[in-house]
Image (cartoon, rainbow, N blue to C red):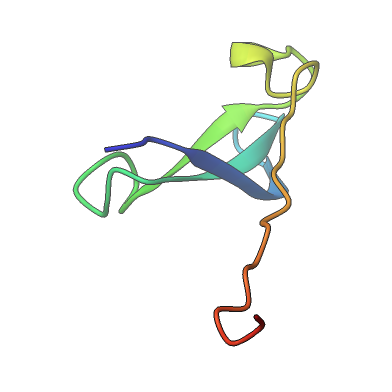
Length: 65
């Protein structure tokens, strides 16, 4: 089973004064904050800022001969 995370937004914690990325994890709702987590912005933790990756799906039309 493949594992992936998706960075889908950002925010700011007024109590700590820290900026963060919002991440969704493919492990499901039992992990982290109901399947989500926050990673502090500006520190490149886990390479989230220096090594982002994405995929463009290739769709095959099974009806096209």
